[in-house]
Image 1 (cartoon, rainbow, N blue to C red):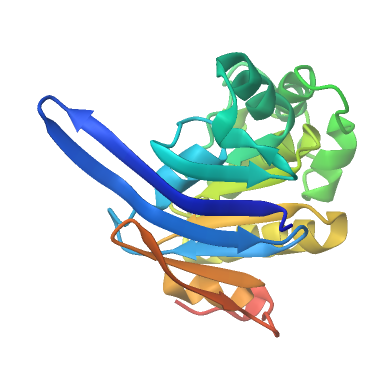
Image 2: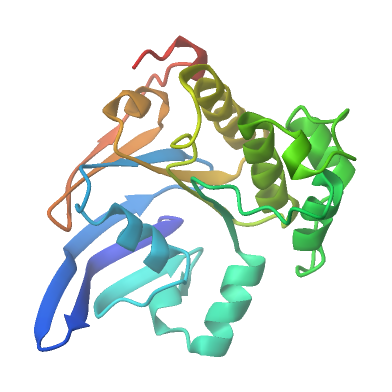
Amino acid sequence: MAFVEFRDVCKVYQMGEVEVSAVSGMSFEIEQGELVVVVGPSGAGKTTLLNMLGGMDSCTSGSIVLDGREVSAFDEKELTYYRRYDIGFVFQFYNLVQNLTAKENVELASQICTDPLDAAEVLEQVGLASRMDNFPAQLSGGEQQRVAIARALAKNPKLLLCDEPTGALDYRTGKAILRLLQTTCYDTGKTVVLITHNSAFTAIADRVIHVREGRADRVEVNEHPVSAETLEW
């Protein structure tokens, strides 16, 4: 059994009297420890996929499995525990608490889980050993995103979900964040899923899921991922 399995997953939203299909019969698998890039145009269903995998939304039909557990069968209490303990989230915007230092932001996340990593050690791993006592307003955009990644990693999650994590960053900083995610995946064995509209990012992935019109149009396994440092876009 694969680490992550989507089996004929559908998601339909009720907008008044109109039904809108965001995901329609999506199926794919992800192996543990892979860096996965989910790519597709705006409106293809990428973020809906991430929200369902992260337990922030439920599927209308089909099944979603993570590490042998059927997430799509969880009740609200089970989904809360799942989001808290099993999933780390990184978004386009950093969502840091402005009156807490970098270290305190990371510690905030580690307080809600059972087996957290040391906040100072994780910040050191993401290159912020000298910035732990700085507040978000004193950090650059790239540094704030590193804090957000450290905060997600400190939970010691089974799965790290990243929704357009370079979207608010310039080219050079975005490349550095991609390199950090790639290194994190390989050094820690975490499974990392990166949502993007930028097809250039697919070169760094172990697995690429092309999403189109609510379906996994095709899945490619990349035998020779390149370093994020070599990307151009």
